Length: 73
Image (tube, rainbow, N blue to C red; front, top):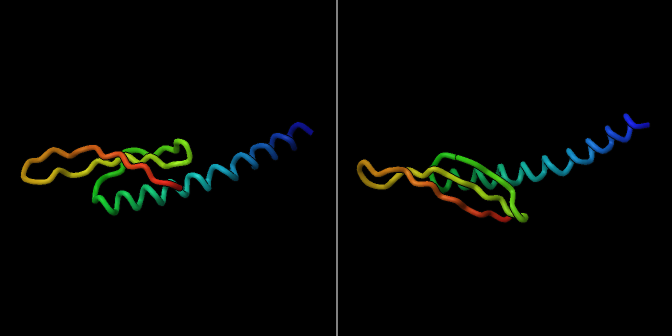
């Protein structure tokens, strides 16, 4: 009985996580494509995806800058 309950609990928990990850992945991909930057991190906070990107600097020898974007799922 315990093994069945554990497998049911793990499958229920796994069902919600991939959907959240897929949503944040697509949001992150859009943000990277739009900015032309490099993805640094993605996290879920309060129903929104927080995407951090390293964006190339503008001009000669300009340092890249870090940009954080909040995207609704």
